[in-house]
Image (cartoon, rainbow, N blue to C red):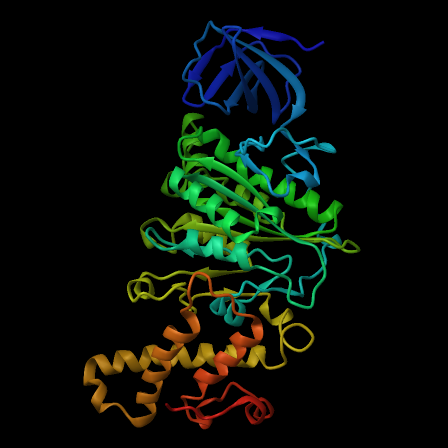
Length: 460
């Protein structure tokens, strides 16, 4: 029979300290009762002798040292799992908030997940089509990959996330099951309404599980949200054989919640005040993407983070870059030029792209075309710098063509509307059309076989 403890030793922000505890476990869930009326849930995050430090998910505002009783459950934080989760909206700890009633779960599983044995991982190969040329053509998302989006304040990462959820598929010739798990952390009510309305109007709600942690919700809940989302994704992927795309937004608010809790615990801060274990904490989430050998399903991650002060060397993007397999970088210059999505392709990278494109996956010329577009656009930057010094009129004829190519690349290839869904064939053909602005002899990254087959001069 579980023991009930009355009274607290200390209250500090979202944390409480319980004294005289016996047989408590790290990560154990506790039931909290306040004045015999209000019930809350907490989780043990530290144990020192007979003292336990507990995170309270619903906040500690109405708690005092004398009006609170606590009961240990003997279990870690769990979430109920069922295929009925598809099409539902949950709060940050996995409870339904859409007014459609309870979800009858097949099983309950710890949100901490089970680490994948590296030997049991299958190398990611097949691509996921997002319908966005800048991603599909140049920073291709591969099934089982973790590919973050680095954004900044005021950039349209929410609109980009919604577009990816609306349009993402495994390709027109695939009959495999596909679904999306979307977790939003620390968002405002109007942003939450935007996502709800977008998914309902586009008809994709039936294959989306949405977890919403609002800015007004307790900070502690923010720590649980991404892990609850990943637990749902792992269940649908590895037990139900589905290919799951997980979108986590915004990782920066998650890290700030982690910093706030770390500060409340009195831990010694590291870079920018974040806890020293930020790297391992992020890795414990990101590494839950992958494919298990012999299984049908996969978990693919797109974490979205806003870079504080647009600083890509800030600890959050810096550590994320070490763990993940590339990044998609959004840029303010393109956004100010009314280019959507404002993807700066030069610092963007998909390290697994080379193994998931080409013949048998997308098209034989895909990798060569992407290499040439990268190379030519990089040269555009050099030409623009030169033109700013000597004037565009003094440029050589070839350099003037590069200026034309740069404008076409940004305004035709990267730029598309928020509801424009381009298949991979359209993206590749558009790339060749824009390369046609340049002379054939400038295309030194493409094999002559592909040039003979696909290249057409187009200087108009």
